[in-house]
Structure formats: structure tokens, C-alpha cells
Length: 252
Image 1 (tube, rainbow, N blue to C red):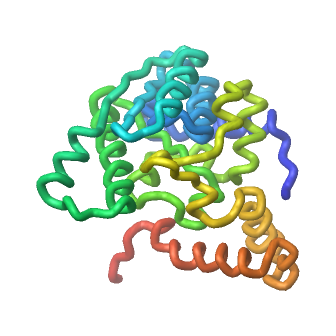
Image 2: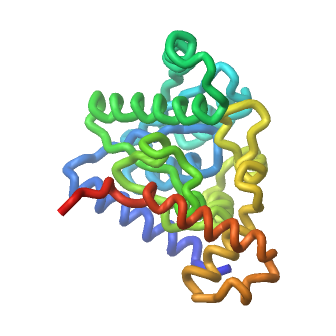
């Protein structure tokens, strides 16, 4: 994997956040604080950039969310001393599915939860005159591991250029809680969900393949030590999710 200067990277991201806000005429951000490492790192970076008084963290649990997710989110908000609020999305999500789609599978429900959360974030964006800061990392964005117009919707992505393994390293440098850094990554959209299980590949292997193929220009054969099936899977995910990384096509 590539080697980055973590302290210098923090400085670059802080400058990026400030520039994005200034160019849009805003001074505050609102962020979905899930209890996971990506949102924790994003919040910490925003606090460094604009001060904790200008950062609002919304915790948006569903009734089946793991209790550790909320407790870890609260811990991050407390440590960073940001304003925060808890809004239970269960009534909104359950009303839709019980009235109109009671046969929906867990994937549809998970996507609906992600989009409900983003609706709330954007409403608070209007309410507080703040920009929505995204929490996506490069690994997941490149393979489409996100909900279109759900967790992928935002005004800007402070850590969107960092691979997941780099986010973990940045979290340590920022001094975030061990409970956030060490727990298994999960979108927590249904009970027992694990990001790596759902992707079918570890983040360490995923990052090596993405970095090797797209940045170093290595061939599939040159990456076969990571498992040729893994390489083919990653490239397939990348190609099939291209539509998520582009604005909607417009006929010219």
C-alpha cells in the first residue's frame, strides 16, 4: 500500500474542508454520526477545521441497530464536544414498509434507512444553514459499497480520497476511542451485518487490489497473489458501480 504522512494528510483535509465551506458561503457542517470509524474520523477532521461549535452530529438509529453503535457515536460526540441530537428513524421507515412494502427484503430496507437518514441530514442542513459532510472512503466509493442518494449523498467528501485501511491509521493519529477503531466495520443496517462479510473480501486485500490496479497500473496477473477471484470480484464491482460515481447522464 501507499505510504502517506498522516499529520500532513490531516492538514490537507482541514484545508479542503475550509475551502469547500468558504467557496459555498457556509461556516457549519452537519454529519451523520453512526458510531463507525468513517463518521468519527470525518467529525474529528471537521472539528479541527472549523471548531466544535460549528459541527452538528446527528445520530439516527433504527430500532434494530446495535446498541454499541449509538453508545460509540455518543462517546465520539462527547470527546469532541460537538452539538448532537438523536433521532429514531424507526417510525418513518416502518410506516412505509408496513403500509406499502411489507414484502421487502433486508437490502431494500437497508437502502430505505440510508435514504431516510440523508433526508434528515439535508433537512437539518436547511434548518441550521450548514453543509452536509460526507463520510465515504475511497475503498467503498470505488466498489459502490454505498446507497445511491443515501450515504453517498453529500456536499463534499473529506475522506473520499483515503482507502479504508488509511482511515484506520488516521483514526489512531486523531486519538479516537479504541472502541470505534477496533470494532468490526458495519453499516448496521440489519442484525449481524459486517461490511467485509457483505463485500466478501477484507479491506486490507481490497485496498491492495484497488491501489495496485488503478494507481500502480498492475495487471490482474501481477495481483494474483491476492487471489485471482478477489481481483476479478473487485474489478467487477468497480465496473458495475460506475453509475454511482457520476452525475446522472444527460442527453446532449
